[in-house]
Image (cartoon, rainbow, N blue to C red; front, side):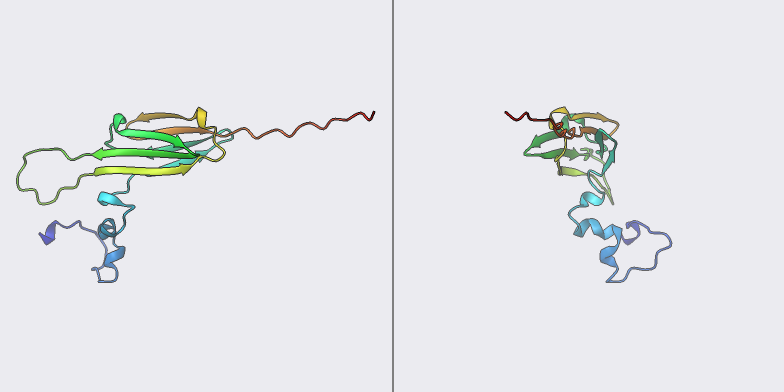
Length: 145
């Protein structure tokens, strides 16, 4: 069984102190990195008028994704179940992602009514338009009576 552990080429043998920082064991101790892989990795780009957020959700069906806005908070939730019920025997090692995952983001400065989302090839893309800055009122003269 020991030979079926993931192999790390060009790494020195593990010591008791380095074991906890090793990526193989990190998923056991780090709740942000569940099921051996990071869940919902997010990239955010900014341009003059909006933010573009890309969320990696490989293997998740569109109907298993929920996006909500409440009290200036954007919540993205996904139900992941990549475990296939098969009757194969003699598995030695089997990794599947199962569970519910959620990420939340502050929407301060975002035009919340104009947020749009698309989902294609395991990537959720959200367009988060910025609120246009309020224009200062133009100075005006007031007549003295």
